[in-house]
Image 1 (cartoon, rainbow, N blue to C red):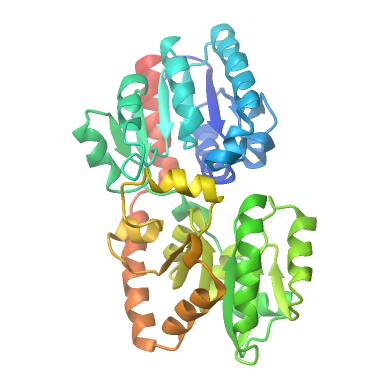
Image 2: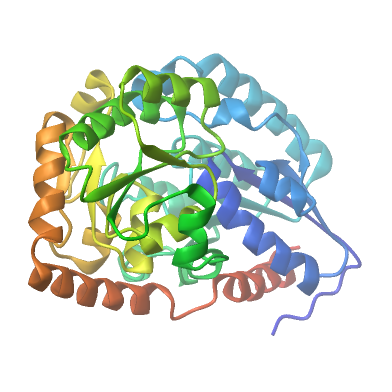
Length: 385
């Protein structure tokens, strides 16, 4: 265990997305109890701010994705870079923890390293999937990478990047407050029917692209057999979400605006946009279809850069084509319904899928991320601060 010598430490954080805000808040809670006098400054969302982060910028403008979407915000990002350089020069934090968000965070890593501020990159950029040159930027500007997928440490060490596997934070984040009966009662769901859950994403642009397709799929499904549950993230515009639902003309759907993990657990099958939600659902053990739709130009650019044949994190971690993936034009209502029925009508397929998903749960839950990160941060503060 590291022995810390200073009375107080200042940590700079940069988490630009909702998932990063959640993953970081769990770590911050651990640091607050394990490192007396620690101060947190930087960029993060409401969960990080609840753990004591003093925000230097509003969080919302950072939460964009896609080549085209990010291009529209370049002026904002340049302004942030200039102000952060001044902040680093004046404040000299003891450590910079940069969370995922590699397009911007790798630039900030270089800036911090040039000013002799040690950098811990938490949640490794997916260089193994695309933009392989990012591994060289990690090697040049980052003292330590904290990986949350088990195969990443070995890949980084092959490139002489110092890396630690800290486990996946979802193992600590996923908690259930209601049983199936209470959940059904709370949302007025028929407990005797089969439940199909749809997760259209946590950003407005994801919801615009995927929710209408999900609702079209729901129209095709037998409503005497299935209850339709649609998850609404708190970060999505309420008016946008409701207007899409209302314009579909679909009645008897249940909008789940809380208890998301319960929905994942109690649904017989899920349909989710690609990203962290797919890993959460897989960790919980519910079979699902993984959907991906980007702006056409973003997709064309990305398709030429991607090095792997799978897009869903559960399939990548397990290294097999377990869960169906529907990408771009393939992501349509007919295909979504087909993938749902191919599984829910096949008990053997359900059993095989759940068995494989239990293997994924074991892989991701073997370490406690908050404790691993506390030890890693203490070690870095002892070494560099």
